Image (cartoon, rainbow, N blue to C red; front, side):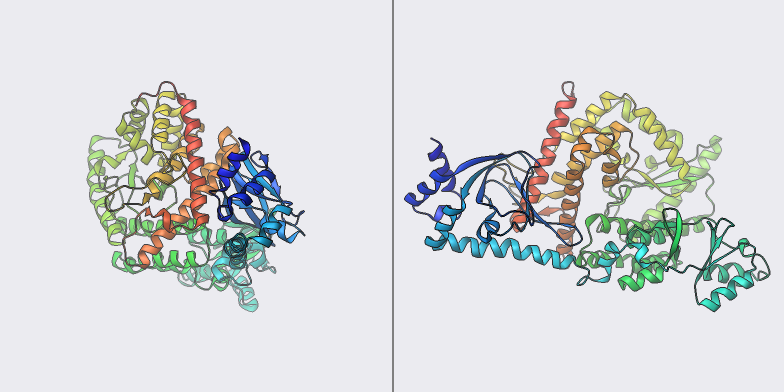
Length: 634
């Protein structure tokens, strides 16, 4: 019975399917079964060579190598019917890759003597491994490692791999706070530097003065150069850790509209990094695009700048940036664009009658935008003290939001089909109404309330009085406590959309229509994973909105994320990057980007990785269903 089972299995597995019946039975008689629990290391890079060729009967393994800087480069995921250990076996000297079980795995193992005999006597068997195996996996691995090397990488790749401390100027010029502006300017001129760090008696930085401060605060204001330098220094010091990557420094410069950053190491001043340093490192910097946006004085002036954002995504993709790096940079640039529009519109309409906060949600709220997505925005404004003040605020914000949403459309942000925009009166309300919305959704979780919660509970403050958003977040956390019924409804939504993987691990695609033979990556893969992480965040009161930030925050407080946090993060990174590449290819072909991918157009590696993601989502959804049943009533 066991022999026949092995024969039937190998008859479906290349290259054993090329063998005649007598030879195949001889091979099957030498096979023995091995079991490897999840996480087991089967082969180790630079470790002993394998004495067996193993074929996965059930389960799966990850084959990967580590580059010189200890970065993991995945060669492949192997599942049922796939073999591994061939290179190690035929070389006999060492294992050239790591092989780890990604789930409980059963293998059929064939000894070296049997495999060597087949290689010597069966040309079809030999040709399969030499042509298919070696070229498909090993060549690709070294190509990936080569592309990740700084020696061959472009400037933008160095942005993600160079530590700020390696770039920062070491000899930082410092001065006491009691010297005059004239003396400070003379020092900067003599040493040809663009900044001067002001330190106290203990040597700790107390402020910074830049050439822009001298221009804007002294020359332009006709200020006396005999005043103390402390009178013009910036005391709100923005710092970056020496161990951080230059990418983090770039984000802070964009966010705070500054050109100099103090670099600290273990709390002590290590150096200064400038926007010029980063531009020299990477050639063309997103900082220049941020500065172009900041310098515009009209909506018409912003439109050309907005069109450069897609080109920046293209550059980042070509330079091998991760999905998380791409979305974070794009979010910072888009945030800058929206803030500039809000500032221009405020100037047009005059000072708002009440403090307000512009909030964003959806992918924008999670800082996960790629190519332009629909608008998802709203306004929270302070509770009016009187009815007349409320009427005045409503009239002002009606005009204000109409202009803002129209300007965003002109700059390439399409309107939300569902009307989740501040120009819709429902989504520009005083704080007390927002609190009532949240309370109603949580205490009466109708389908409409759950949908609104999924969208709005990813909100973050973008502009204005952020204290209003903070107060709403605090209210949400308090209101959610012990609301098991609401969480059950959210859990039901979370498990309602299953990943597109059939019983036999084949992709489930559209059967007809415009997207026949394709699957909706956003709806079937990305959204279920987002919903899982959001549910866990609501359970634990996590206020982060970014999916990866939520995962990091949950690792120490949520049992499931503590165990599978790395898998969730890797899955999100992979499917997001897959979506970005798909949309990029469509734009290159002059098509409107969508979320429908053809599984057959994916590489073998991508197919297996996507299947792994689908299986991870399914297993987690099963766990959620078990946790929240019985009592699911939707």
